[in-house]
Image (cartoon, rainbow, N blue to C red):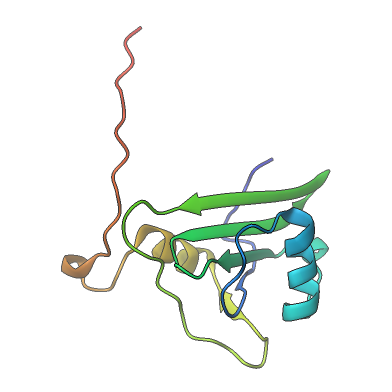
Length: 122
């Protein structure tokens, strides 16, 4: 349940996606634009035009799951496009690097807003 991991295949949809789309519309994008079937267990990644909003879509036992990440600061970096697969094939580490704004040179890490966490006392 709600599990993404390094055993899955990840594909970034080419171009910008209308982020008003929900699960059903994104399933159509996977089929029409990427030539794939979301029920195969792969994770499909969609980025909005501003590169501040990302949606992840995949099928789990029992139904479809969609995760949403909105950046309050910075933008997602897009990897190289692979015309053979009509997407940006990625691995788990590539997704983490993109979401966290990590670069090879730690001094050039992309801007990300830090969540303010409240300490809970029992």
